[in-house]
Image (cartoon, rainbow, N blue to C red; front, side, top):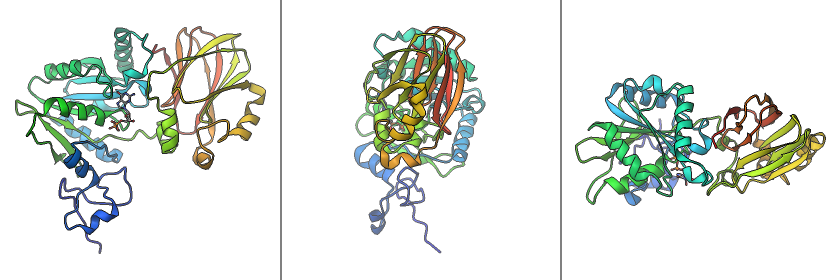
Length: 367
Ligand code: GDP
């Protein structure tokens, strides 16, 4: 029987196979007398939080646990991938706890975007998804935009109670927590990890002056996010790093746009019109005639149409088509995690293609 090795920092069972999962340590670490997991190592030496993924089941236990406590819940979403980064069902677990909704990565949106309008949009979208947050705010954890305001909101709504920060992977939760650590922990303050009751998972505890604490919970993977369908290099291409420059296409009926080789939009019917594309500036958009689209895709996938890169394209599930009729003015067709296309006037008939398992849907325009 194999001996179970535990991390001296957090007590989690050590594994050396998957860097993205809890308890990972590089194989060389096992030769030491005291083994520390990579996550605790980073925390200890760099005061840096690394996110780990966990199973849905463990996450449900955490949510359930939070519902049993008296606390403020801070829910972080990625404003560029609002629906894809949404944690469904949180309201069912929150109990009577207030939820503060934080939209991160606001630096990615065009500067012309008005914050109050966007906040209203978030409120309405949250309500449609069954959540009624006590408040909503916009931040950029990377750029430090809105950090003071969100800290003030947290302090106001927690009324002396603990705070739990939740969010799925990639929303920028670690970046956010690292910023908070910089702001709230003075020198000599120790950040500790502790088990979450009922799970083997540790949460990061950031002590606050009044004896309460901010807890960083592990992020859950939303499996339908585009991020999980591409490799690391391609992920860099599709993840916007700076302000998105919308690209406007004047399209005739029966024309097609390819978003790299990851998604496709056929403009079927509705007269000549312009479509506004919001994607990472690095993602190439290719226009062609609908009648040539299939052939182009078959020939150029992994070449002209990338990502996916050629050596990775066989791992990508086949594209599946979803038909939409745009009934209202200012509608977005969202390719979850990749971007969206805005139709300003109603009446267009389109077909949107995404890899099987990735979601595509319509929403009221964000911008
Ligand atoms: P976590 O998985 O939720 O902990 O997310 P991370 O903090 O590791 O961030 C995921 C990715 O989003 C990283 O590439 C970050 O650099 C990026 N990111 C985090 N916050 C922001 C932000 O405010 N703006 C932008 N543009 N990117 C961000």
